[in-house]
Image (cartoon, rainbow, N blue to C red; front, side, top):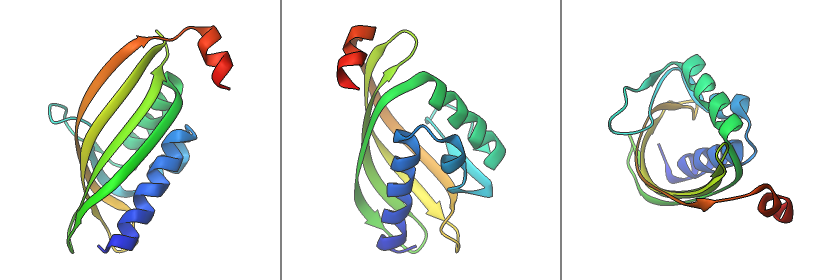
Length: 135
């Protein structure tokens, strides 16, 4: 892995998430990829399971913002700090996340494994009138 391919993957991940596009998100992963969403969850295994996860994300998150900073890249792994915010629907909670990715990419630039650790805070309930004013 090199810094350029890792940066491209992270930017594509952010675009897929913020556009709420499960197909674009799933296309970033190898057929046999693993995706460990939290340290306490069993990893999702395979692109089909990852796609289903992103279908759920697209249904339950709105007004998504995503950013990242690459911390380190080796031949085998990339490490990035990332942050995101969105409104969780229902119940309309403004949510912020700050986390770390440990990612390995295959030779084609698809994710072979992703482990994330994150801190989540839900700040306040957002009402429909709040959402209308941001669109």
